[in-house]
Amino acid sequence: DSGVTQTPKHLITATGQRVTLRCSPRSGDLSVYWYQQSLDQGLQFLIQYYNGEERAKGNILERFSAQQFPDLHSELNLSSLELGDSALYFCASSVGDRVSYEQYFGPGTRLTVT
Amino acid sequence: GQNIDQPTEMTATEGAIVQINCTYQTSGFNGLFWYQQHAGEAPTFLSYNVLDGLEEKGRFSSFLSRSKGYSYLLLKELQMKDSASYLCAVKDSNYQLIWGAGTKLIIKP
Image (cartoon, rainbow over all chains, first blue to last red; front, side, top):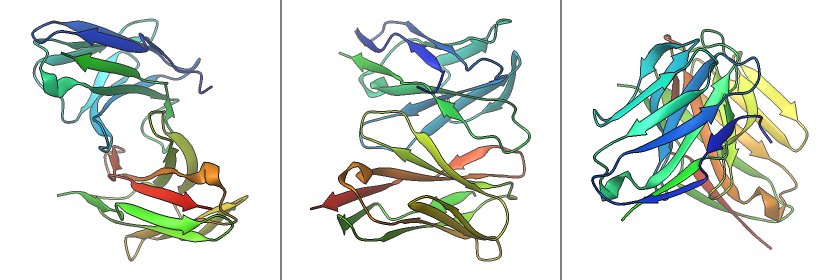
């Protein structure tokens, strides 16, 4: 158990819908990262927050948005869903971001768009 | 652009040794990580190298050569549970983690 929690574990929804994925980082970690992993694909970095502020953006679509709240939990919002958005979405956290701290991953949310 | 190369798939025999290579071209370097990921599960941290040389941790070792932009992960006394994907990731000059596509390791009895 990494200490990072993600809800829900599974989500099935229809095209065109909007969903929110939630992540709670490990106690004491200030950085939160979101990743997308499609079937048999590598990890695609989406976005990073550090202590409430956006720190870095990766290959995140305009239909996707995220935020980190004062209690440091984070939410990833996916809208106008398409079949291709079906994937595992991982959240990870680390103590900081400038120094080379390892990232701890949550169990992921499996999103299926039908 | 930034690039990390790993073999897509490797096969090895239980009890043997396997070396998974990773080459990288990034804008700056602030450390290299190896993660293990079993199918459908979250990646878990294996090792971190920031200086040249070999880091040993039980059955797993990781080597780094910064001048060659090269690392390898060495797995000894392979067990069936080592069947997984192994991800190489490099922190660039902006401290952003650049991920390789991963190497799927298949262990045969």
